[in-house]
Length: 330
Ligand SMILES: [Zn+2]
Image (cartoon, rainbow, N blue to C red; front, side, top):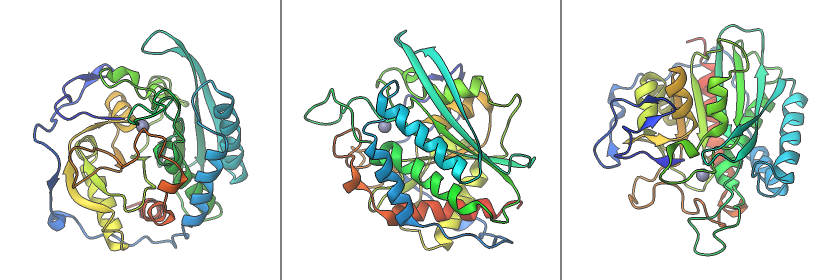
């Protein structure tokens, strides 16, 4: 994903973002106008940060998850087997497309549904592919990165949520979407990112499917991560943004979820949200202090390995998202 700062008028997938920021990041806002978190009516199951950490390790064991490589295929099979183990109705949306350079690209979006017959549905997503190059590194720039934080962390949090809601009293439907081919983009080409989610938005797994709201997780595992309120999220889902950040504060995760605005980021939520017009929030590591560095320290380098990951961060995000799920119906 990349920063859309000052570039946000560029067309995204056929539409265009409106109301973009034109001021530099970040801008502190205030929780004063944020409603107090409502307590879920049902018991929220415990999110285990160590289990989520182990899910990151397992993904790394397959090597880089670059589309059309053996490690990618093996990881896909494992992800499908985990969702099925947790009782979810799971399918793989497989497609052969032409990428932004007219090269053939085979992608696999993994879709797993909890409570598939419920009519009220929400969507939780993360990209599961990893970047094929380490272009932000000083060495071995042409080689793929491990993608512990950028890729595996979001998937790990979703897997742990899927694990702990089995057998719970959560009455709503939850669709877990693992987007493929998000991270092979080029800085000057907006259409080079997010191939999997863009394909799905134009070829939904169920005709007319539209969740009440959606949350995307990206880079949610680094030690002392900070999650700022990103521009497209605030635009498409202002109430949900407030609710998530207020929930995090009430659960004791205020040091991660900062009440500060950030300009729009081109990520799966923006691509899908722009095509389908759904309320879609990105929980993504953004830097408040260092304006020169948008994301976490080891972004798109070989340093994005297991050392980057802190189970406490995974828990902060997972617990907050679980709590938000269990607030429904609000
Ligand atoms: Zn990336």
